[in-house]
Length: 228
Image (cartoon, rainbow, N blue to C red; front, side, top):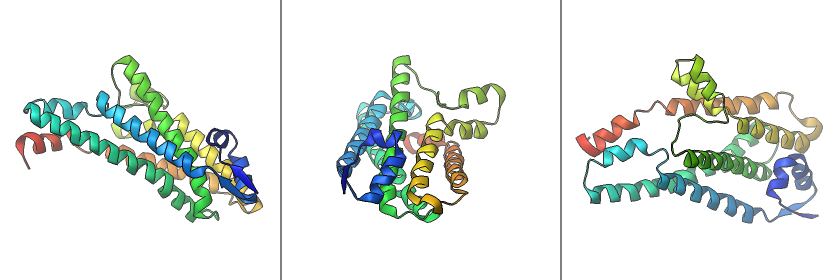
């Protein structure tokens, strides 16, 4: 039995995707992978061109010559493309591999699930980019998380960054993953799989929050002005 891979349908009905994978071959998947990755790369490039997440580097490079600034901006653009590929590849192949180890589901079927997840993450970034572009400014916190609320009551920035990573889209991703795994494994599903999925997201949030404390500004000053 053959069925066509529908990205938006898979978001709403991940259980149907699991059933279709169990019944036969799903076609059109590679085309959807290409589409999501191209859209993601374009988004990351637009964010870089607009200056999102490069405000620290911009004022440092402005102290140099025009040629230095131009070269640095091209380098940043290339770096943005590379980072977009790494980011999407991890959530597509990397997380699929992790889930294959904590469940009884083979790696390849999980790629169909993780394409949905990767697309949701890119879609979240696209919405934030549009909001920030319309507002004409950026923020280190997401409007889809409890980060803005945490800033009013907490002073520990690590906790704020951690809470900021747990967004509405995070909950949606866990729900999609759980519904897919539940219908794919059937009665053999592990009872603690939901908690495992939540734990994975918490681990990602803890790591991302820690990365936020890397002294990027100091490193750029050393590299571009003072020298290493």
